[in-house]
Length: 238
Ligand SMILES: CCCCCCCCCCCC/C=C/CC(=O)SCCNC(=O)CCNC(=O)[C@H](O)C(C)(C)COP(=O)(O)OP(=O)(O)OC[C@H]1O[C@@H](n2cnc3c(N)ncnc32)[C@H](O)[C@@H]1OP(=O)(O)O
Image (cartoon, rainbow, N blue to C red):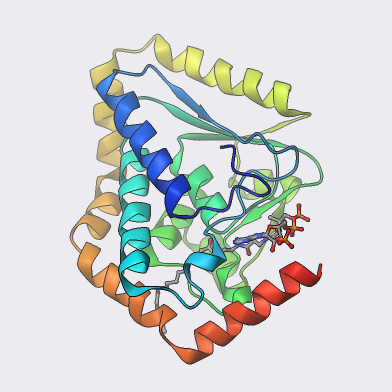
């Protein structure tokens, strides 16, 4: 990802990510590493400006493109690794959680689904991804708190799989994971992957329209708009 300054996921970046994932699948990609050009941010999550005083049609397109991107990434037949070389809050954490393996550069960055802290709600499929990675108990604690994990905490709870000392080390560890996968019969591998992920995927696939409506209704609430405005101001002042 290369959208300065913080790889915030706006409609354009989501379209680019989705189209890349579609292309990789078509071209029978053998494996993908998702990482960031920024030296300190993997992705700042959803672009707040897409939710603040939105145009209804654009907001709908934004949300359905996010859903498409997640579905493609989460169900990709080829192996996927997130080399998390910077902070990874909210939607950034979702991208990492949707890969099969996570290597994160330590020690100073943070990762987590922090939505609750912002007065917004992590959608059920964000929550499912966290639950699948760290288990029911830890996921409930993390999501109600909107906890951002340090790299050490993330490793301890199973949110990431390995710590790297810098980006090059993270890429090298990600390549080791892909090398291990490349020796396996591809169809057997991807069938097992999709079987593990099917229930989570189907939950969104069967409720896409309801999920979109919930998003649009949610961001239309004056209280949510106020929270987003205050949050944007805090970020800008910083
Ligand atoms: C009632 C029940 C109903 C249930 C309904 C369920 C449905 C709910 C639907 C709602 C779903 C909402 C889901 C949201 C998921 C998200 O992803 S929300 C986004 C959350 N993201 C964050 O909180 C991250 C915010 N950013 C940061 O913490 C920091 O920027 C950073 C740690 C990533 C990087 O720090 P640093 O390197 O110091 O950069 P900054 O100076 O902070 O930022 C530079 C620049 O970028 C702007 N910016 C940062 N993040 C965002 C963002 N997410 N979107 C847009 N813009 C962002 C920041 O304002 C700075 O701008 P300026 O340079 O000052 O102009």
